Amino acid sequence: MSNKIKDAPSKEEDILQLLKNTLTAIAKDTYTQPELTHPLSGDTIKQIRNCFAVITRRQQELARARGVDFNDRPRYIDEPNNTFVVSLDEFRDSTKKED
Image (tube, rainbow, N blue to C red; front, side, top):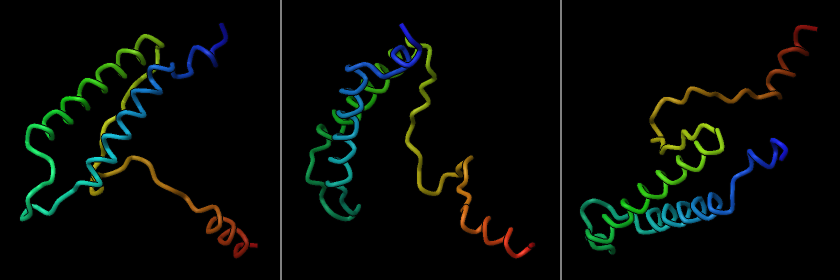
């Protein structure tokens, strides 16, 4: 078995990611301002959170079984990011000025 096939996510991992993406979309689509009544019941919200936890645990198990790190976790918009984007256009412009 080649490394490409071994490192590729399994069908189960693809399904879990699809479920996670769907639950995330539901959460975003039903976001409600704090002063308004949420359309989902508290029990339903709790069940969605539990689903996220179960899905993530299984994704971690499957990734570990493949020997792959699984560091998927939500990031808040104001959370510092340890990566940054470099514009190649700006780089090209700056090198032209030096010529």
